[in-house]
Length: 157
Image (tube, rainbow, N blue to C red; front, side):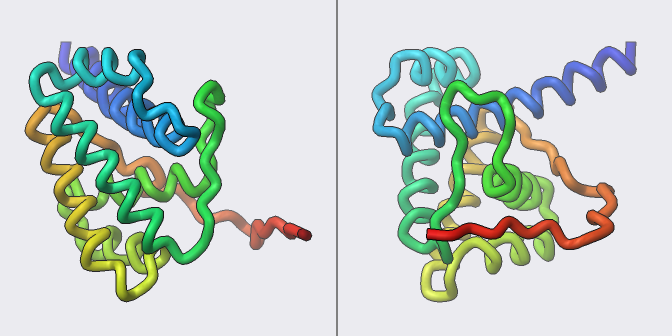
């Protein structure tokens, strides 16, 4: 029974991440008013859905204003995560779990100095809304071994 509980908790944590990423993708592509997003948030958060969606929107706005570079987000119908999406989820998971050092490292990497305080407030507000609605994120990359070689992508304009 305990094993089944752990599996369902892990599945819930994965669902929370998937819901957030799908929502970010919808918002960024101009579909913030998508009825499917509203329905999923209502099913996940009940009466707290509107506040949770507002927190997601505020977080995205602050991140967009303060980001060090253009982030790569996937298409709403794609199932995989981009490295940037994974890092944002990792940052949020670190904030939710109270790992201040990991959270600060991700924040510094993603957001330029003048915008870090606002981004930190936005992340913590979103994490608080997640917690208020019983939603939890996992620290996906914790314990994963680093790659054995540099993995850089050359981009030419």
